Image (cartoon, rainbow, N blue to C red; front, side, top):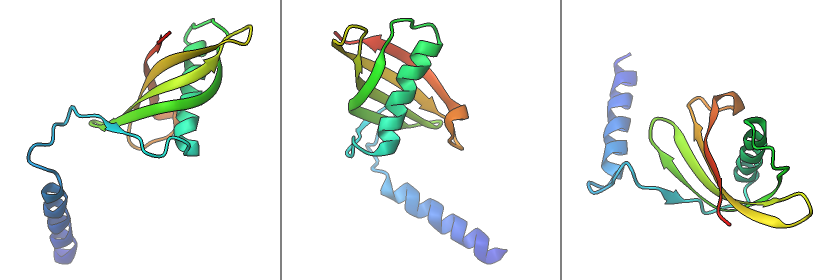
Length: 117
């Protein structure tokens, strides 16, 4: 028990030391591997959820173009998404999702979904 408590204390100190003193909890970080299937899956979910919530515009997910994340009370993801409109033209959209911990699709919440063009 003492060993476990000591390990928790050490881990907490190491984690705290790894965060720069100037780190702002409101900062967003760019997603480096945008082609990761998990990242693309979030983009697809954003388009599907937008449609489910009443966005009757017939959008079909194509791919995530860029994205960023923020860790704060869960993880927030903002994605720039390419989606195909009815008739075949492409549109660019920004979707924002909050992922609560522990993560699964039941803990994802659509915050915003807007056209960029």
